Length: 85
Image (cartoon, rainbow, N blue to C red; front, side, top):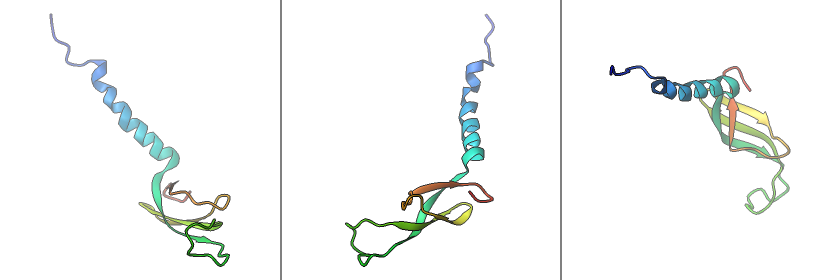
């Protein structure tokens, strides 16, 4: 019996890089929260008071991006493409 050197199962690992590249093309690269602005109601430094954020600044491989807050909240990570959001 002759050994098979090329099996289809040897190439399954290619699916992982292809999926990562597809995600990169679709949503971009992750950027982490760097700073934010919020409405100061006199309790700016009280960690137990609710804040209403107005803008969020994210930092990552494509630079710094400032976006308006979504419903008064900022996420910890946002995905951006090279040209912007």
